[in-house]
Amino acid sequence: MAVTGTDIEAFRKEVRDFLSGNLPEDVARRTRQRVHPAKDDLKEWNRILDDKGWAAPHWPIEWGGTGWSPLEQFVFEEECARADAPFLSYFGLRLVGPLVYNFGTQAQKDRYLADMRRGSVLWCQGFSEPTAGSDLASVRTTAVKDGDHWVINGQKTWTTEAHFADKMFCLARTNPDLRPQKGGLSIFLFDMDQPGVTVRPIITIDGGHTVNEVFIDNVRCSDEDILGQLGQGWDQAKFLLNNERVANAHVPQSKRALELIREMAEDETFGAPALHRSDIQDKLIDLEIDLMGLEWQVLRDLSGAEMDNRAAAASGMKKIGSAIQQRLSDLAVEIAGPRAMIAFPSDLDRENEVPGESPAILEGVGARQLFRRAATIYAGTTEIQNEIIAKQVFGL
Ligand SMILES: Cc1cc2nc3c(=O)[nH]c(=O)nc-3n(C[C@H](O)[C@H](O)[C@H](O)COP(=O)(O)OP(=O)(O)OC[C@H]3O[C@@H](n4cnc5c(N)ncnc54)[C@H](O)[C@@H]3O)c2cc1C
Image (cartoon, rainbow, N blue to C red; front, top):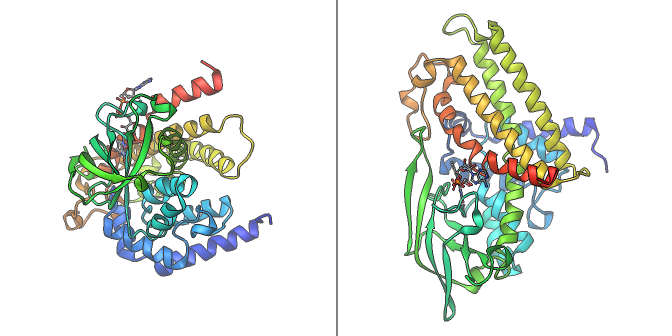
């Protein structure tokens, strides 16, 4: 049945009412303030949504999805961002979840999906290595068969949330004689709290801790820990990277950021509102137009519309979405001026250090701008997206 404008507005109201009655105020405040989510907030909100049956709207109904249309899913995400709800575990729900229900064995679906949906088991993505980022096929982590077991050795880096994840999905070479793209790679699913897994923090320029180095020394896995079939790693990684690029357009989150920036531009706490300046008005309008264009493209993709080249479109969305996130955070700092540095908190518990006279909308502005430098790197750099577009659309 087609979703009408009236239906969608009724749906939006239902979501909004639920959020206003169920999203804890302190969780929303911390989400607005922090650049990196707190584990407890993620888990608490995930549990509340799962109780309602809304934790994984995009999953198949059989595994706890809601059966909503793509437009309803988008509206849900938009309302969550608007209410400052935490962005739920990206690595479980968005990345490895779809891998498990598309490629996993029945036993893996039964074993992992329910806990992942509830957020009681959190995941991290072990793909990148010190010498393999853009060129993922060159991963050096090896998995070698030893009797009934696989022995895994290697180093992962930039592993987001590895310090609080319960499990990793880890890309490794399982056959050095085959090309990585032709059966040489597999993905292993393993526990983080076992001997041989060492996590070391990487503190980013915003002062926050979200990424890590992970050292893997003689970690033992069984055949059942290989996601799907042996040697499917490259196809699985490509499937995941396409999903990741669309999700990284972050349109609902950018719309919320724009709303907060507009509020900040109207603020009179420290004198004439920035919105009186024509250069600020121009930047706000340019951002709004570009964001609207991106939103249309994302909605087209979600609706399953015919597209000549979906992979190139996903790259375009990631590239434009990440540039918009950076421009938004730059504009926020331009408006806040030196006050962006006063209200600096990143993921640390520094709420009480925010000076009393700073308006709440300034919270995290400086730290966010610094961390957003990474938006054009993670989930595939802008240069790599340009290459994909050049090859697939222009045949270069
Ligand atoms: C904050 C953050 C979080 C991350 N989280 C995760 C995570 O959870 N799990 C995970 O597995 N990875 C994660 N990553 C890693 C991320 O995917 C890689 O950093 C990214 O793919 C780039 O790889 P690299 O860092 O090795 O850079 P390189 O690939 O070495 O690239 C260096 C520079 O060279 C350019 N370049 C490389 N190849 C080409 C080419 N062929 N043509 C033109 N230019 C090129 C790049 O664009 C870049 O500017 C994260 C990264 C960051 C910064």
